[in-house]
Amino acid sequence: MATELITFKMEHTLRAEVDETAKSAGFQNRTEFIRAALREKVDEVKLKQAMLSLSKMKGKSKKITSDSERDIAREKVFEEFKKKLR
Image (tube, rainbow, N blue to C red):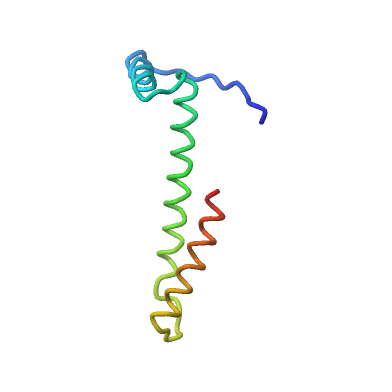
């Protein structure tokens, strides 16, 4: 995978904290730590969006369903969201 150089400014105290945390968490360097943090944030935002989308669907069905039908539907929905979050 090709990478692109991105430059940004960071306060000295935050940079020092990032460096210390990256080292204590076993990351090779600051860059690897920042990449991991950004990936986690992207995943968090995607999960929040998926949950919001689900919450908007609550109560939309007019059909009366059994517990087993709800369980099957729930599993299908989570599988679809799982695919989208990858």
